[in-house]
Length: 186
Image (cartoon, rainbow, N blue to C red; front, side, top):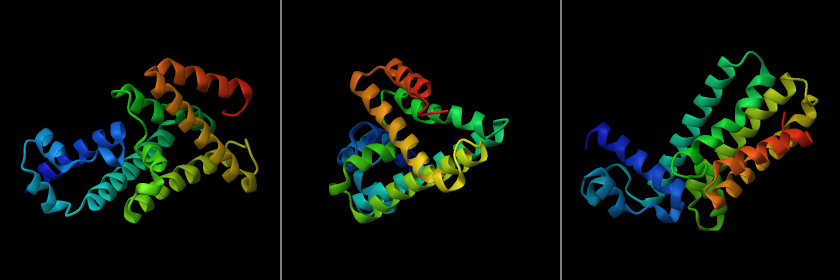
């Protein structure tokens, strides 16, 4: 199997997991979407846990690259923080999907250990990025940046969940605006 097929499998699996969670990863369905045999998926991902962990790892890597790019484009940490909610908004615009890590985190009890490790790594990487921006922008003291970052992450993930339940990205935008007005988000 070539690298293009592996990438197609990862992309299809990401879309499936963002829409239906870990339980939505079905080798037969993915194979049909990609146009290969189910057994071909097992060549690169022997188990569903292997596939789930690979998808979550790629999602984390892509998300962190996007945050690094966002920060590089922003004139300062405050501007980067103000743009952070956009990263979650993109999933809603792509077929009313959720942040992959948020969706998988809700399935905590049903996740194999390798998948759970990747989900936690995503959360911790986002918290660390947010904490750096919060401290650099002078919004919180360095020792208070991590708890504030966790609150910001939880608020944004919650807004995404509420918007998805209504299939309305406008609900997400309204919640983010409300969080800003209340001082929860910069």
